[in-house]
Image (cartoon, rainbow, N blue to C red; front, side, top):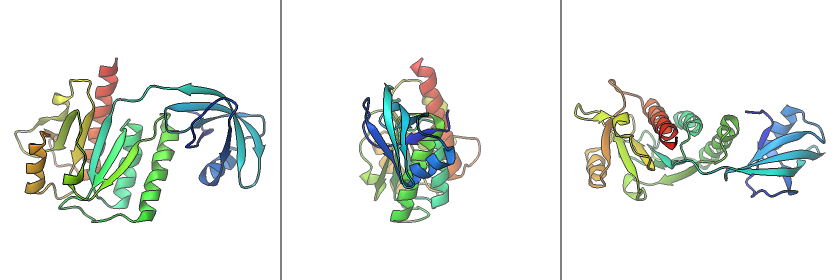
Amino acid sequence: MPHNRFYSAKEFKNSQEIILKDDEQKHFKVMRLEEGESCEVVNGKHQLAIAEVKDIQKSQTTLIIKKVIKKAPLTSNVLCLSFLKAKKLDLILEKATELSITEFWIFKADKSEIKELKKGQIERFEKILVSALKQCGRLDLPKLEFYDSIQKIPSFKGLKFYGDTSEKALPFYHHLTCNKPTLAIIGPESGFSKKEITYLKELNFIGVKLSEFILRTETAAIVSASLMSHASLILDK
């Protein structure tokens, strides 16, 4: 994965000019590229552009696209999380993006550690997704959605699981045998409320065990993302 990879939300086409500003301009300055040199640009929409540095200014840099490469979408893997402290969400978003999670649904659980997220935190989360996208080499930017309660989470066509600490729950990997879109929902540190568990069962979510031991929320989320990622790798072959 090259270090000189930048991000632009635009759709790419040959001979198009791309302007790097703000965070991307800061990244460009760190790379110390010169006019005429090549670099890569991703847009989070399954496109990779091979570009040439055309013009460097103090506040922005102009690139010109020489070639566009498109990649097929990843298998849909959704990680659904309750509201958590920002540092925990930072970690989960970064690592789960590297593990090919395609969507993050974040909801207010009955026992959530916090009840709302500030605008500045959401903007930070979006920057973390872009940074992880560039670093790990994937071409699609995960979606980030927020919901007021578990009941507001949209319907999902595919395999649906929730973290279950009961002895009867089978390991998560036991169910990952079909190449289908998958959603895993992780509760807060204090767990789901009885009302939420009843609701999940009514929607045919399957309770699964992630470990022999009780996991912290961020650990459970990363384990779930890893298992879904590996299932996609194996089954896509």
